Image 1 (cartoon, rainbow, N blue to C red):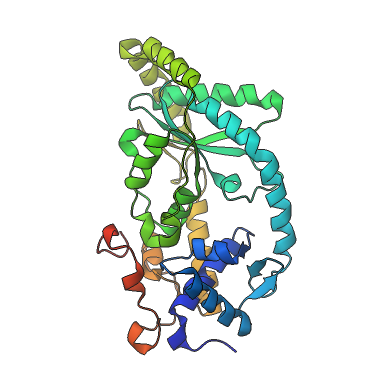
Image 2: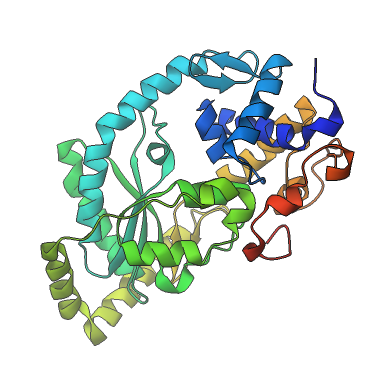
Length: 342
């Protein structure tokens, strides 16, 4: 039997969290649901009680150590298989990530994509997010492409597909999808810049307040890596580096400009090589699934706004604290600001 609407604010947040992960065929365990809880900062005991009620009502099912939507028990075996694959890939990802972090003008490297969450399929690349010094983004991309080619004979498929400079640390997409991508990225080089990166995107705490509190730390840099970067920056600083950057950036933007479809972006401070509309497709599928299940997900109006307005769906009205539910507005970190979509 479904839970009464008056008891649903936290229950809907739990269900929405499971729904979002399900879009990636990624079942969560109890602790992961609490960590990734969407839009609500709730203690483990509160989340556990909401989970138990949803399981008793049949709105969620157990599949071994995981919690899944009805009919999705098969995801448990898939998750175990991908977890084992991730364990095999991580040593290589860290090794190549540290190598990328030693390149001239690189300020931070983080593993991103499916490996970052432990969900790589057999075709998964080693995805990386790179932060560079201002005025050297396209040179760093050229160095990274050389690293991709060097890694290929060793069986490593590197994909540094998102580069930005330290002038562009504050991301302009501020939605649920981007919050997940930001907070699940695992830094492997550049601890100081990673701290700045998170600080510049405190809006993500609105979407994933529990995960926001659990910040990973980048490992310390070796002295040899620092010396190699310093030598490269000495050689490519000043006017020679400026000219090379302008030439490389100009020719790559001219080449890529005709390939994008609105999702990929290329500027002097950003190289976002995501051709396609995966972000918007995921957000739209998330809303459609929630609507089909009768869930009122937290911050639903913010997701609708991010998709450009009305999505053609309506949602039940979540209960307020006065009607027996949780006051979710009071659970969101006050430091984020007063605009609930900010």
